[in-house]
Length: 215
Ligand code: C5P
Image (tube, rainbow, N blue to C red; front, side, top):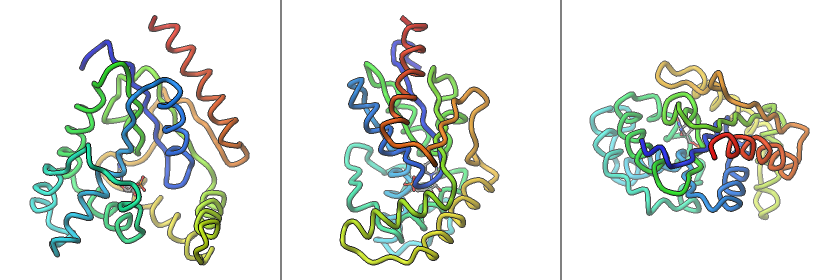
């Protein structure tokens, strides 16, 4: 790993606010940003589009190795069925190995990188000088997702979204390979009662203390 690169690892469950926070931090420091969830989603979409099975590890691994990090489109990949399929293939060790390799390569970009996902601080970049674990209660996360959909003029069923958030948590936290959990040295940010601005300010003071130590 290039020791001149400053890596910020951000993990947390679905709809915790980690994506918005990561983009904001990357913008503030002029760092490259990778939403690693999009790499799992791109793999899942390629399988769905080709009519390939979601439960055959060698097939999914081959597709994962072909994912282009430079062409990940959030608008297309945010589809609900793609998210569901992504969390199914994310349990496969061979798929994870392929995507983690590409993510580690991305993490070396200068002058610094922000990677967000589920296993950045624990597996992808365990030596990152800054690790944040962003969380919020399942009710708050479901409420945010509900308001986001309704805010865009769509219709949504809160109970269905709530069940979905809990199911996704169970799958992400319960899998054997790289389960979602805070790294031992991660700073916890519970955004249940915190605005994105407050979370950003809290993250900024943690990052600045670390930048001073690394200067
Ligand atoms: O964060 P997002 O909802 O886009 O991620 C989609 C799915 O990809 C997650 O539910 C999770 O199962 C998987 N994922 C993962 N490890 C990561 C990022 C995402 O297993 N680092």
